[in-house]
Image 1 (tube, helix red, strand yellow):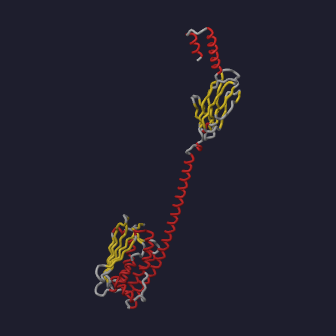
Image 2: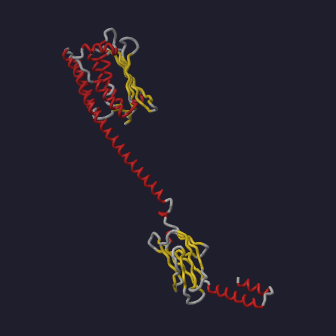
Image 3: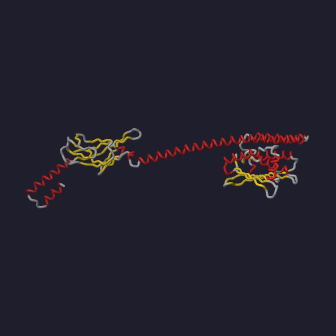
Length: 394
């Protein structure tokens, strides 16, 4: 600017008395330039995670300097061309007065978030050198921090509640499973004495008729059956092959007991013979017993026929075991009439216990396990029992 004024005085015809004024303006501006204070650098020691201190220096000073939260303790270095200069500085927006010092630096720390202007000058002078500072606050003072913390706490609470709910649900399922197993064991304990009692009645009938050979043969079959029953009772499920073996022994004992007045055949899907496929023990026997004792044995005009079929099927798109037991007995209506006449002589426990077991299994397996009993077409023509079970594997 001083050079410009000097140039104007030299080129244009300025009056002589104006030259002195121009000269004084030029000298004043040159003097002001000589007294200008320059800001050299800004040094911000930043603490690292390994407890070592390193300095970050703003060397390329622009119109404004951004101070991060980790740099919010910094030195501002400045100097003057004149020796022994006394300085005055002020951080406008933080300080309301100028601070006098002989030092060539100013130190600030923990400045609140905001916009500030640092001004430094020579004492007694009005000309100042200024630099704009933008101080960023810590992240926990940002506008988004509170909502994020709230959402985080809410999410953690939801996760804790979910884990707690999952734990309680699993604990409840475990207790239900234990209860189910205990209930099934108790029902099997009721079934086994009932089954053994009926077999002993068969042997007793042979002895009373003095048919000792048949009684001996029956006793051997009975001992095998008892051994299998005792072995199978230790397990919640057994292989289908073992269940059918025990069922055959029982049917053969009943055939001998009723003088071979009926025939039977068992048909099973060959794939079910694998040991991996399981079934609750003594689940089919009560239905077979009911068909023989309450249907077939009362026939007088024809021979009895018992059919047992086991196949693989699907229930609700899940692989299941389908069992069908068909007899050509007198039917449920005629059997109910006979039962009314002889209800004091015989109280059947097998079917009651069996249905209790089925109900217990249904609680555990759901819709995969169900039974259906219906009369065949015609009067006194027999009964068909259909049972759907989950195809269990070992």
